[in-house]
Image (cartoon, rainbow, N blue to C red; front, side, top):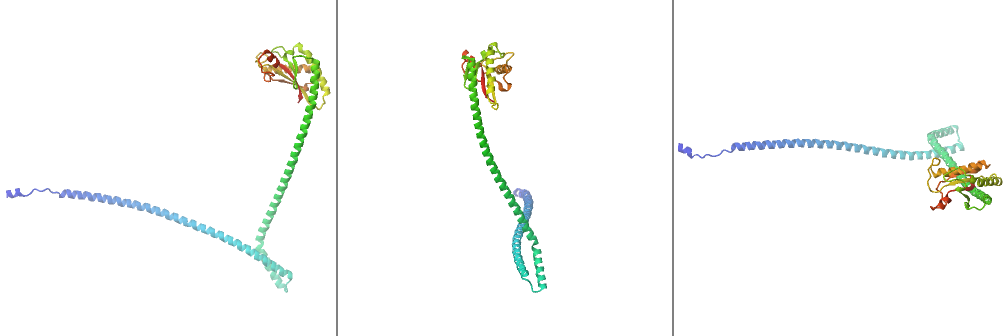
Length: 337
């Protein structure tokens, strides 16, 4: 018996492992099926929601289509109603004319006449509103036509006045130019006479010149260097100038508004003293000193103007002493105000 037991084969038992693997597989499959069912549920819910939204949009589109159709139908009905109303109005006008013709022609019986009158009144009552509307439109058109006519007349009057004003302006400008040219010519004649007599009274001097329409005195005739106080050597020349100005005033017509402008000029060399901080102040002060002296000699103040130009209006651009001396000057210019 022992020998038989030794001869029995000793095999490996795989069944428990197989059962475990199969159980695990079933669990995995079951889990996957559950996941699949859950996913299907959510997909179905989402699809159902989209179907619901789509259905709602379709219903809204259908409502909009119905509203559009209703609007078109109402518009068509309104057009048809308007056409029918025009036709009815035309028919009623024709009927009114017919009834009026019958009334004018006369009726054989009083009852027939009354019936026709009643029918005519009924027709008039039916068209009263339409006639009132037409009458209102006619009144509005008439009022608008009147407004347009008024605007057209106003525009025409404005254009006419504008043309007249332009013609007047052109005429006034031409007359003013002629008057100014005449005044300038008159003043030029008096200026030539004034300068001629002044130069004759002053004599031939190198430091006194006529440059264009200006009478030029060198500053050294009236002032010391850097000063705006009149020097005694210039009194005689200023006395002659004052006499010539007073004589000129008696010759020039009263309506010719003239002045003698006294211009002060310096050279380009800067100045800065206790009295004058710049050439502007020096040149202005010198011109004012000349004006004050002439007023003291009896020249009317309203015929005099003082101006200072500093070094900014030179007669020459040189840098020699002769150039500096020439640029330091007092100029007289007879001009209009």
